[in-house]
Length: 326
Image (tube, rainbow, N blue to C red; front, side, top):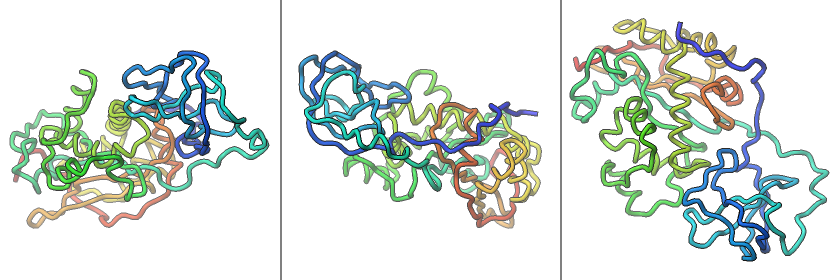
């Protein structure tokens, strides 16, 4: 069986730093040339930006109460809002110490992300002209594994954050190859092209522009987290269920039972099926999976599922399509 061993007892809700920000005003004077981070948890620093000792910066927020980091505006940085350790300087006014007695910010409630994955053979039946659908092979990855559609911050209105009008319209019009290429490592590009066949049509660019720009991280964070989730799913009993029933009909109940078996009781309630008509057949084309929490690796899948809200499904059963157009 393709399965993952998860850390016992990891079924808790976690706070998401971006949602626990405490707005601040005033200034911060650097006492050391500390790194200016885009993401505290992942220690990402696009451009290797550092504070200039003695320089003064505008304060935007603290990461929590009591604070360990503050967000500053760093002129010339991209993005210009960065996190720095509080110990790296002084503020022109004290950060409210009275908040130290308050309860910690509550964990995120509800569904923070929808993780959408395709069963590529069924998708291609509806889009045979797509580049990635023209030369499907029985021995290809997508013949027996789920493929990545996207990771979507919620609510659904969280789209196109800080994106130019030009790129918004290119994304909406389907001119995805006109969008900027993603800045990925060589390994990320290799892995993404395997699990997201649609990247040949620019799907990766579209997903970043529409959804990833609203994610708490840069392009590499967004893709790394998506790849971790794909690894967890494609090494689970859910993937076994689909790969073992190609050409046959399976039900929502079977899919949810496979999620429960792989990721714990109740996990399946966080999953919905999307189906499409292909002649006289009903095909399962996509799973949409509710998740909540910070993504740090494949082993997080249990915790992320159980922290999210249950969901309904419009499709109750469908056929698992074989690779190749009918």
